[in-house]
Image (tube, rainbow, N blue to C red):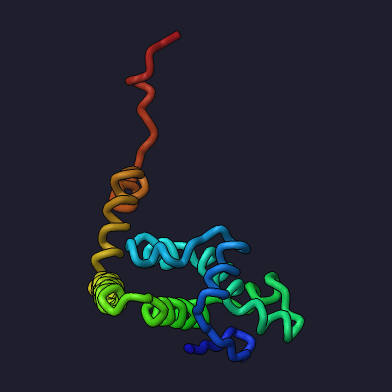
Length: 167
């Protein structure tokens, strides 16, 4: 069993078993066993709202005992709480897999997913620190609105009356 804290400081237990999987299916329509086929991990990582619905369904008996509904639960889920809940759910899913081979393979998929996510974050940080994104934004703004950047270096004079055709 894994745990995580929400943004209200409440500790939640993530215990995935047959009953929890059935409850998630019933409340969200999601099949946690899709994790074995590899489709669920990306879906949960990309959709934090779905992830929080799944986590709430897993934690529902505990939430019911605390008189916490899904909206109150959701209000306390953002940022680090979602990240911690994600890791707790995914780690529990690995442990739940009935086959030792599936557990090993899913563990490797999860480890690879975490590496890719860390590399992507590192790349974003590197680009932010290098100023490359600022330069790109400046270039795109200049291309979209050349007069905005050209007007800074030259002055525009009104047209002379000689070039205006007579009526």
